[in-house]
Image 1 (cartoon, helix red, strand yellow):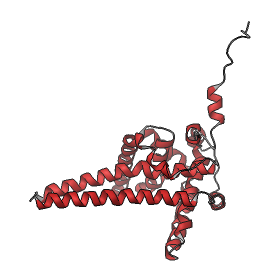
Image 2: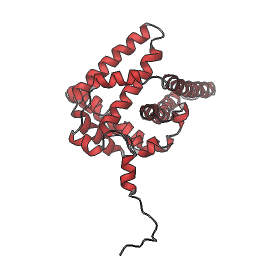
Image 3: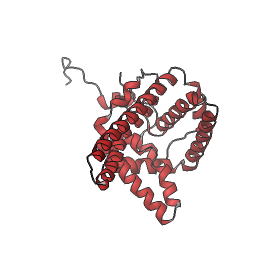
Image 4: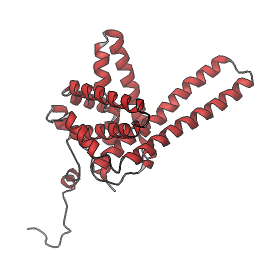
Length: 250
C-alpha cells in the first residue's frame, strides 16, 4: 500500500530534462536533428534586440583583459631585459605568456556563446558572464591542446583531414563548458554531430565571415554583425545539442 503521508517525490531527472531547451546529445551524435542554417541566421537577426549591447560590452571586457595582460607582460619583460637577462629567457617567457593568455581566453570566449544561449531562451544576460567559468579552464585547455595537435597532424598529412577537423571540432569547447564534458568526449561529440551537417556549417561560416568583413568595411557595421554571429552560433549549438537546465537557471 502507498503511504498517503509520505513526502511527495518529484521525478528530478524528468524535471531537469523538461527545463532543457533544444536538441540532445544522443540525437546529435546519431544525426537525428535538422538545422536550417539560413533560417537560424534570420532568427538570430530578429533576436538581436536586448543582446547586442551586452554582447559588445562582454567583448570589450574580453579585449580589456587581453590588453591589460599584454601590457603587464611587456612591462615585466622590459624590466627583465634591463637586468641583463639572457634573450633565451625572454623567449621562454614569451611562450609562457602565450599559454597563459590562451588559458584565460578560452573560458571567456566560450562564455560569450553561453550568453547567446541564455538570450535565445529569454533568460537574463549579463556581460559579467565571461568571468564565471574559470573552473573549467583545465578541461578547455586540454581540449584545445588535443584539437590543435590533431588539426596540425591533419594538415601535415594530407591537408584535407586538417580542414575537416578544424570545422568538425568547432563545438568541442562549448560542449566541455556547457555540458561539463571531458576533453576527449567533447571533441568526439562535436566531430560526430557536426559531420552530419559539415558542408552546411562551413557554408554558414563563410557567409558570416563575408558579412563581418562587410561590417568592418562600413566601419560601424560590426556593431551589428559581431553580436549577430555570436547569437547565430549559439542558436545552432542549441538546435543540435540542446542547452542544459543549469545553463538556463536564473
